[in-house]
Length: 335
Image (cartoon, rainbow, N blue to C red):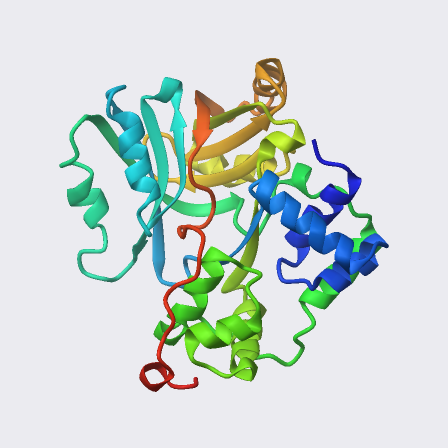
């Protein structure tokens, strides 16, 4: 399990994923070397990774939550093939290991952007059922972290880190464009990669890298998420909750759910169930209490399907670890 310093470091990274170790150390009243060692250990032992992600609407992408039912023989191979794709995230094995749930990222306007949905998946052997739910609005998740992974710092410590993260006063926000592709690809793999390495990857000067980062962060087009094993926070039972709510009540119910500490994700979707959430609980009894008491008190929820998650195979970032190939300055220019 995590100690107080581990939890403080993770909370600090939630507030500012690129905060220098020296700043985090000052807030936690330890040395920068101690923070660097703890960060390295958590990366190795807790699968900790900071990733830079773009707001899908500003980046011109549509997110689809896909549920696949497959034969027991093919389910794991299919899940791992989805993990390897650069257009997927949050790949999970659920419901006894025969259901695969994944988020697919598709360009909103590009022709053929939904090839995975329309062609690749239906042609894959072993699949017995497919449903796709367009994510219409995210109430919890993305830049809003799971509260139980970010409850270690007090108000003053949090203020210091938030103010430093938002210190780019006078910066003009910008939306991601084609020229930002190499920068964003590198940050998807490691949100804490240094500006010197980002300059090498993009072919820009360090000053240009710093300016682009500030511009993308200023308008929320770029944010930083923290991937970490929830089991280290006492989570042993995970479940996806598929709910049906009357449209007139949807916003009210989703907003209420986003305030529940047991939930790490809440979103409105298309489909026969129009609201989905992910519950992170200590054990099955804890999940039962949540469903019957907190969730059960919301009478506007008409139907509920609970789908236990057995394994998380891929987290928030579509990219696996490592940096993209070096780009020749003569081809990319200096930005």
